[in-house]
Image (cartoon, rainbow, N blue to C red; front, top):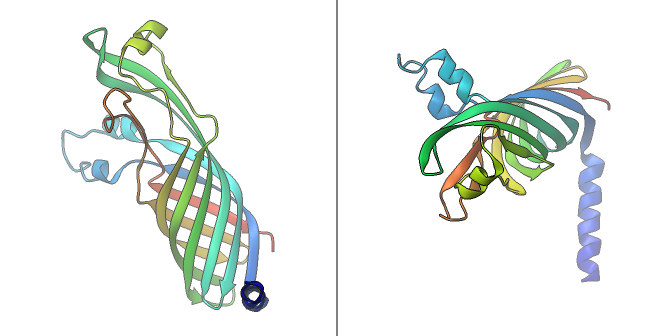
Length: 222
């Protein structure tokens, strides 16, 4: 066992002595209009108001590191993300009646993406990259409010007020580095943070899209 750890240490030392390390800060904008919704944009019955109702927008900021070994690289990040949304849930069963529920949601999360990437193009002042990997999401104080219902109506209905404490998503994207700055565009391949109805397991009453399209600007400190 001791020889095994010595071998692993030597391998890692060799890799990191050969690797190039970037570290910096980043911030960006997330939009969560789903792919299914986008396919309906050409439908005359799907209006701009429908798009606005279904789109969730949020912002994120945090730190990133990039470890290059030749053209391959590993990019872990630590980000704080927040989004707020007013919307109406249609025809929810409350007191035996179909009711439109005015809902306010605030989503606060800590996310840890870990991307594996490849540098496609590398010239003196710029480089082009592609990457993909999991994104670990942890709830950081999200809240949900039903504004036109009493406490008794909420307790007596099938409405969900809980959020998942953790979730794993998958992202893929591309990045353009110019001098000390990096512009990245990503797409999220898993679209919902869900809470199941405890009375009917598997039936999701709360469906919150995570970020389908993410644009971020990063500054490499070194």
